[in-house]
Length: 433
Image 1 (cartoon, rainbow, N blue to C red):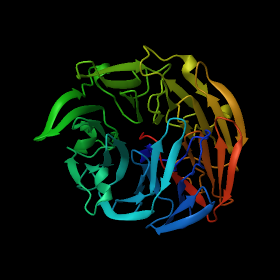
Image 2: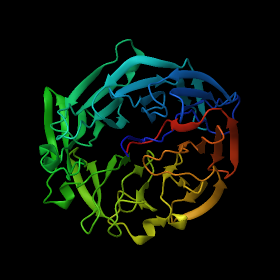
Image 3: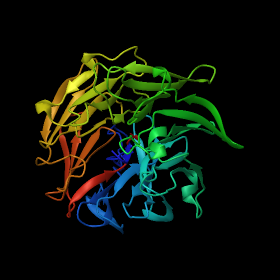
Image 4: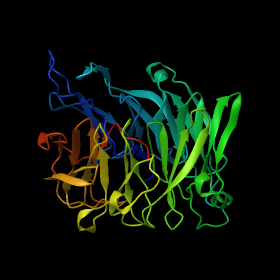
């Protein structure tokens, strides 16, 4: 995926999902942001009234979304030729009361603030920052400006949001991750691709550096030694973080695996590689804060027809961590509930399957969510989208102009809302990939 969020990919959901616990006042459900497959608009659906309350014009149909930390601001990859990224203020604010979460619904607005660059891709939001990565163009096509633009999240409330730019040394399908303490993880370009002499070379990075933003960019640690499996991540794609462990999907083959970066008790960054159960690989990873397991798609170039449970603290991964998608279908779209204990998987046959992740994979329910569809990259037909917030999974149905909800705790269908048009991408709260 070029733009994951999470969450990206991207494929993520913005809404305020409140816990259905007993308390002395009604709980607001919030809003859902959605794109249209045919029309260049972004719409906002009020989940309490069931009505579309706002509509904003964008340059092209079905832009990609990502949610900034906290879920209030939505990052919109507009898809225009200038590589423009916009920001939508969903107006949602949350206040936890232990047994439930109160939702405050403020004004919705599309910010005037925009960021432009060559080939916008991964978006990651952590520690009060949003990192927007612009890959740059293929070196043999034209000169470009690969970079990461780092935006202060709180400053989006003001008239002039604060941002700074980290110039990438060369084009790459890279990633920038805020680590807190003014530290950042930045991917390192594949040197062969950067030279532009071998057009078969991959744009995917092979390693990372930990940089400190103080007086310049000071290198604190490097994990870019291809001679060491525990200090590199060849053909990186797929990222998630939980419990302070950063998990990266690396190459397939006998030396393949996921790279796990974490701080030790002294604050020093360390890395180790956990091998895959076989010679396949992952390319998109999902995790929830505080959860033990992450989940990734698993396969070779196509299709990724299995899912892989990852314990970042484990010594190894085994065949028991692999879940084969029924019928050998592509894994397509998947995400975790708020606890990280259950996973929903939307497959091309139109079914939404709900699984318990541990102690072993176990199917809990199957819903006929939408008509069968094509989820391959670049599909011309409209593709439904899955997003999860809290214990609710929402699925867009472009063919009928509806949004459907499925409860992952009670395993029952919830709201079924006609919204008109051809709703496709949903916006919101997933991790980058």
